[in-house]
Length: 467
Ligand SMILES: CC(C)[C@H](C(=O)O)[C@@H](O)C(=O)O
Ligand code: SF4
Image (cartoon, rainbow, N blue to C red; front, top):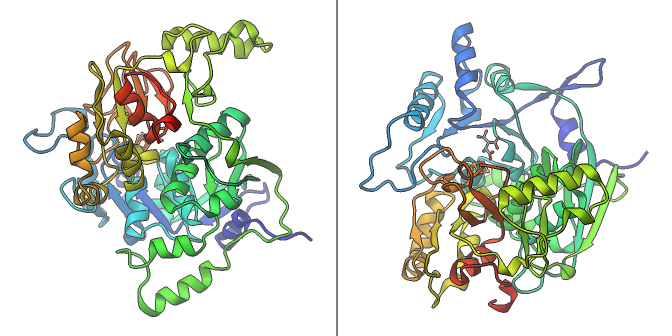
């Protein structure tokens, strides 16, 4: 018999019971709760008179709807404020810790989980949010769930799930200067397609992944869902343990040593067999820019917008035509000839300290191009505080960027930060479907380095020339 994959190892350790149909009932260790996806689950609990079974396993924070200009700007009335107020009330009713917008622990749910040490290797972690795959960067089994599943986790701390197939993505070698992990994941999605990962749990491996910081691994795992995979993970190692040591909710003292000993066994066995293997070299990557309305519509910055007439598959060709019309682009246009109106640096993909440092390194001694408006939104208050301590906010504001408070911001059109129709944005977020950043808005997904370079040039430029 062959060995176990990391995914199966964590899965097997959490099976409460197995059903004849082949599904398993899994014990869920941790649950993150945000304002958009939780109201229905709380309403169901309340209607049935059920109390949350293990309040300490849940952590609630509002991120999607919060304003990112807090000082001097009262919360805008309406849906956004109601969502945040309701989450606070629901959490209080059920004895769940709720992080207030003004707290130093506040931020995007997928940024604060790891930061606080709420996310730990070997655990099962869920959230009513598709980017829960981000947390797999720490070697846990993390996935997004729907509203009715949230009810089950609140009430019973369990979930009935179907085991996924496994895919290993091995990335060896060293990333060239100016090329970042965002280019790795966009490049992977361009290669396997937005549906390439459907039905698979991804494990990222290889020397390039081993060399990555936890922040970079989070960027990688974050966009697993954009390849269609609910799960992305990296086996924990010394980098993981060093990241977690001393975090607020991480084990301390003798518990820490015991935890590290247990976490050290969390890897895929050398003879584990994956259902699919994908392999590529980091050295061959160049900076990527998405041109269409799915992340698989991504090209090297040196590329030209493709012609649907050259696409043999009629369905794909039609999709390309629709995308080009929405994006206001013509085939044959060089990516570097595409001018932009806005720049958004932030989100759970690229709103961590390392991302802001990379962007600041490009922006230093340069200015935002005339006519471009650019914002930097730290992924959490902790990122914001650390960045300000290093003076990054001054670099950004001196260049003409706005420096905001933490939240999902312009990643998603659920708060005040939006594109207006027709505006074109270089964005470090993860989704580029029609209207994602505001109705009629046009999104190009890029790395923080590329977004910063685009901000200063007013169009896409090859960040390798500035790095
Ligand atoms: C609103 C929320 C449930 C959603 C998600 O599931 O991912 C959002 O975070 C997103 O990125 O599209
Ligand atoms: S930052 Fe964007 S992708 Fe991440 S949770 Fe918020 S809306 Fe979703």
